[in-house]
Amino acid sequence: MDSSVTPLMSLQSVSKSFYSKTAKIEILNTASFNLYKGETIAIIGSSGIGKSTLLNIIGTLDKPDTGKIFFQDKDLLVSGDEKIASFRNTKIGFVFQFHYLLQGFSALENVMMPGLIAHENKKTIENSALNMLERVGLSLRISHRVEDLSGGEQQRVALARALVMKPEILLADEPTGNLDQKNSNSVHALIDELNKEIGMTVIVVTHNNEFARMMKRTVTILDGKIIPV
Image 1 (cartoon, rainbow, N blue to C red):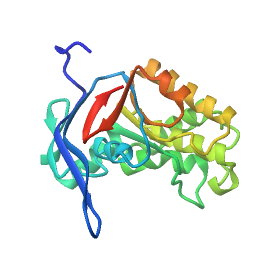
Image 2 (image 1 turned 180 degrees about the vertical axis):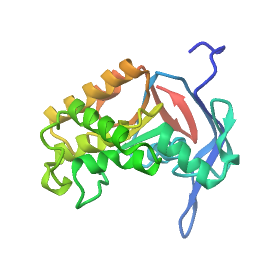
Image 3 (image 1 turned 135 degrees about the vertical axis):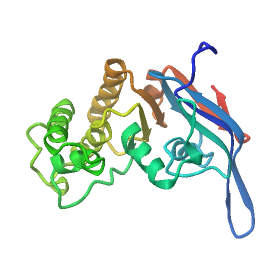
Image 4 (image 1 turned 60 degrees about the vertical axis):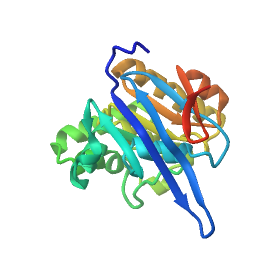
């Protein structure tokens, strides 16, 4: 990446540790990492090296012990919790291996939720949600409660929810880990398509080598640092 291009997001000298009853477990040690608009990144490596921790820090779900996080040159960590939550809801889309959908609500209601939280116009967000559900192949399932959908359908609802606000960054943690090959391929293709269509930056944690190869950049965590593979 051209060093003259300003990063969309930058982690600078970020450290993060966890503590067991007997030891300090260091995940990141003054690690630095730049993300650029429109790029795609796979975070790979063995279990327990901190891939999900890194994703959570990028997504502001977790805070580092030390270091700074900048988004478009603005230091996120000096903002209050309310501003950070607003940033996360509007700028970041999350897809997890377990979809965390709201039981008892329809597919449409689940996908609309980020826009409602952001106090968007209800009709506008409904139209956006309907469009996104159509994009993930669920236009005939919009009124179904999520518990009445198959696992593959539920994950596609989760993807639609993550994308409904057209976030600048999509963070996906093993997004197809519980899906069969057909549904996995469909999700992979849609993420790739939307990256190209709207210039969305995509960062995925994955053990799927085929999915990782679709990304333009691959990194791992070694000795607390984020390094290219």
